[in-house]
Length: 353
Image 1 (cartoon, rainbow, N blue to C red):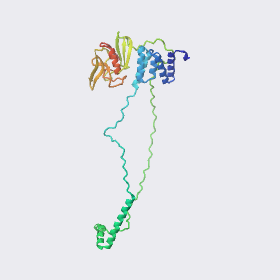
Image 2: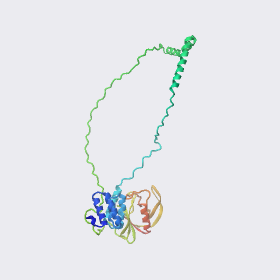
Image 3: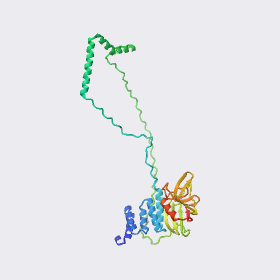
Image 4: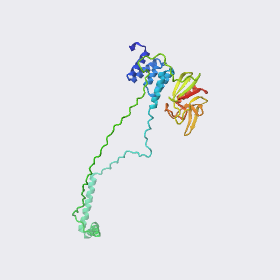
């Protein structure tokens, strides 16, 4: 039945069926085919957003909103994608680098074996020593004076030592030494203690991550989009900027049409972003920024709209979608460049919760 429809319709139906079957790779495959056939409709980009990573989803939804600024599905998808970005884990800590005080182990150096002495050389030395000893003994036996001298050298110190300590000459009979006996000590017996019983506690139920389905049901998509009451009412003719603090989104408008949308970081609860309507009064391609506890040189694409509050590029973090600033509106450097050259001095900046 699907084979009889046109290729674009077939690709979108296949993407839809694959998504409901839980096959995200096929959904992505068919959505890309549909986008190649007709990149100027929002449906392929919605399907790609539904099966992509959080930040890739935002890029696809920005494309869908640029094609249909009043798309209720694209705006709902943007809310869903922002929630996913906020649920992303923080960056992994840097690898554990050993400090300079840690000991560094090196492989032990192998000792080279000494050169073995030939057995013939050892045996010849032994024989020479034995011959010398025998010669000395024979001379001692032949000469009484020499025998007395040798006897005084080898045996007299032993007699003197025995005389000093008042001991008789040691005999060859071994004296039994004291050998202590080990007396076994009583082994303490274990006294059983009552083991506490675990009281089962109910585990918290997992909170399911919200899902985004471009088509919530199998019914046909209506040809006309419903009017989105959440859209800000047109403030004036020409170009103006709308900053949504709740969603951490900034929209570029021409009249009542969205021409671009950006994920941003605004002020924290300690340093909130001002709300109201303001106008850009000065622009700098690069500017230094300083305040209590920080100094940021060469901040790119700065547009001030109220005192020290401005829109600008950010090179010191990429945690967009989460309030991070001291009150300014942080954009990625490519987004801030686009907005810088799109907006003029005097452009309206509307900031609201």
